[in-house]
Amino acid sequence: MARVVSYFLAICNLFCRSSKMDLETSLKECSAALELFLDNRFSDALALLKPWKAQSMYHAMGYSSILVMQAGMTFEPKDMDAAMTSLREALQTCQSFRKKTGIVETLASLWYRQTADNLTEEEMHAELCYAEVLLQKAALTFLDESIIGFIKGGMRIRNSYQIFKECQTMASVTKDMEERKSTHVHFRGGISMGIGSFNLMLSLLPSRVLRVMEFLGFSGDREVGLSELRQGAGSNSLRSILSALTLLMYHLYITVILGTGEGNLTEAEALLVPYTQRFPNGALILFYTARIALLKGNFTFLRDDPSE
Image 1 (cartoon, helix red, strand yellow):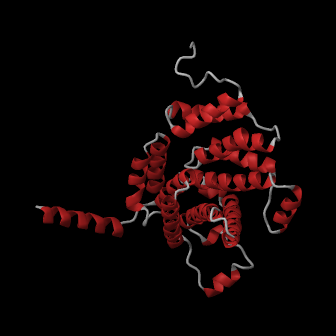
Image 2 (cartoon, rainbow, N blue to C red):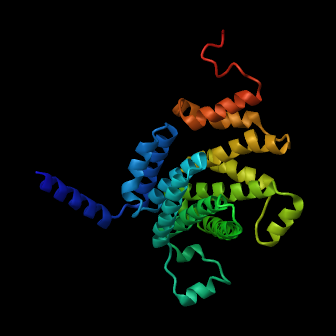
Image 3 (cartoon, rainbow, N blue to C red):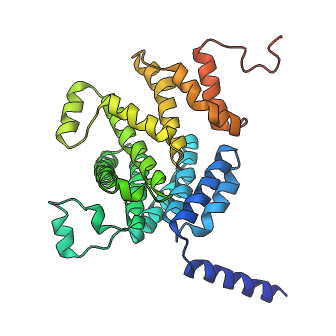
């Protein structure tokens, strides 16, 4: 009987490796995994993503993203190694979906950007996923705290930013055609999250450093960053929550730490409303809800019985 079960499992694994998941289905499954994650069901989210992480770019990105967040919270060497290994595998998976180019096309890309006409819908999403995973790997590389780590991280960040800019160009060129597809909202939401985050974070740098970064091809416009993130947070896309969390981090922590006094508690509360309704016990949601209460001086908010 054990042999029969083993044979059956082997057949199932072989089927999973040989089959292919379409883009729309992978987005739906990753959205389901994200909801599990926000509902504190971390193991269930990983279990849903793991079987397809070698065949689906979104499963690979989602799986590695959860491990990166875990590594960022624990700073345990084993968690850091697991996250870095997963990111390498995710990059390979995303790379397999990117447009294959020959030597001539590769040399031409040094002077000319890729156009949307040359890419399929799946290849466009692969560019976006590759940029996001590359950015996560760069962030993890910085934790190495060595000169080599900083150099590698900086190069990956620049590469990621350039891909985001190319995706932004693709979205504007194919806007009318792509908006008819159900997957376009996820592509545009990813661009808003990436471009918005880069502009917002770079705008916080000292003016001298920012001028150098702009010379290297980066842009650091705070209003553009906030506008893109608000657009991403308001879209019904896979990355809406990521745009919202970035805005919350800016309003509730960064502005306080830097002392700019530009935090918007009203907007922060509005961003949390749809998620507090859907995930009332979610750890991330409770964390930011408590932060708002703290900044407002509502110290009785976290007590079980406010009348005590």
